[in-house]
Length: 142
Image (cartoon, rainbow, N blue to C red; front, top):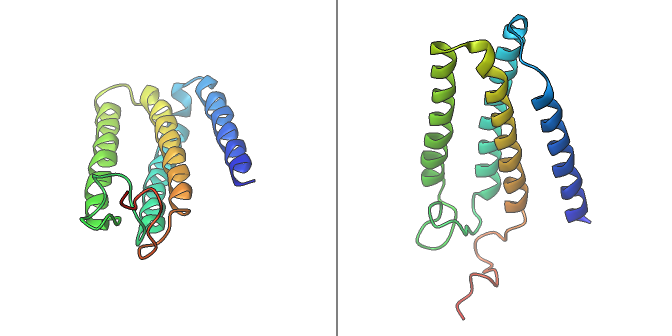
């Protein structure tokens, strides 16, 4: 039942993304596009915070984000995720400042909302991982 609802959410996000991509970018909508971009940055940050919060105290399969005991390491995660997202947001801001801002805000917002959706899905998946102290079968020594 959980997987069926997850598939419905993913399908809805794909349809929403397709509708937003098909909407033309116009110069008169510059303020709205900039507001949409700012909201997408906030959603991306919120998705990363949710992912870190739901992963804390649990086993981690990503070797870049775990400590020597196999647990999620919050320090590494904050460093890696903030560098990746911060670099992307900085690039978007520089492109908007140096180029035609009305043409960059909407596509950048779509990319940010898409990434936030994927990260949110990963966060929901991480919520099902057992907490530290109960060894999951995929991490148990053979």
